[in-house]
Length: 137
Length: 286
Ligand SMILES: Nc1ncnc2c1ncn2[C@@H]1O[C@H](COP(=O)(O)OP(=O)(O)OP(=O)(O)O)[C@@H](O)[C@H]1O
Ligand SMILES: [Mg+2]
Image (cartoon, rainbow over all chains, first blue to last red; front, side, top):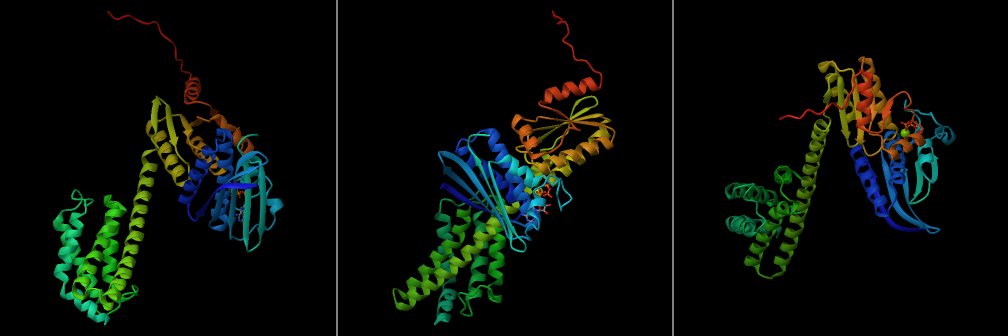
């Protein structure tokens, strides 16, 4: 995998979310991603950045344009130093929420992207990585 | 030795002010439209006084001390007000950095290129850079507060409630629908339902860039609140890519009336009110 372009964005408040989404969109437009895939990527990212802000009080996001096996795409890594997720299996289920919400963020985000990876350690934090290819479903 | 520097500057304060003013006035970025020369002079004089007071004791590098409180406060005040008046960062920076030039000129004139002079120049250089950084930081904070205020204003003005027909309200939503925005939208909508006695509200989301689970929840809440008021709510402007994303995300909007376009939502609203829109015979007016 080759990273072609890389940008790091700090998330600490609601306004940062708007900025992050704009930057992400710019990267997606630049590589010529279809509007549908753009919307899926942005929506999935939107869920993850909101979790980061809501459950970990913020964190750091890395946007990368990547190239692998003749495919071009965008990889986004969400890293926080929050409380971590005790049971990832549970958190990934539709409807599970500790925040009195819909509990669709994590499982929904997974359905919207091509690759999804989540690692979490209690007391240390959470890292979620997603990839959305430019073409394809 | 360092007190000698302060003495030198104090002794030459008149010339320093003149030279500083000259530097500022000769700079073609000077904003006479924003501040008169007289005001600028007063501001410069005051700042120079505070500067000389601050260095009097021979402290040129620790700005976290009492003697620097006055000048820092004034610089911050100037930066904030300049940021809000629409000055560029360059114009604000020149204000501080042209003082540096005037101070250094004075040192050179008095001590020439002696070793003390070089030392003094370095000291002044560092000090003025530190003051410059303070202006930048404050300037940016000033700008941020402007942006914040504008965001709030945009939120207020970009959620109009339009009475499209008797009994039908339309709310075009443009931009991100966050919690604060939803609150405004909901309040405006519910108020307008009362004011106009409308029974149908159309929420058009053509201008909303993405619908994530939070936005969806906000929409659902708005619809429920409308229903509690005895009115029906239709959501229109759901673009193809948004429809697909909502489905993948797993959000259930099946309890809500949705339409692809505002036109079809309006049609539905007419049908619900048993109104008929017909093409009439055209009368030719002679
Ligand atoms: N970054 C994180 N740090 C700590 N806990 C998290 C983090 N992200 C998610 N969680 C936990 O996982 C649960 C499920 O997250 P998910 O995004 O699926 O649902 P939600 O945020 O509760 O609701 P929704 O996103 O639908 O509004 C959360 O309720 C929270 O307990
Ligand atoms: Mg969530």
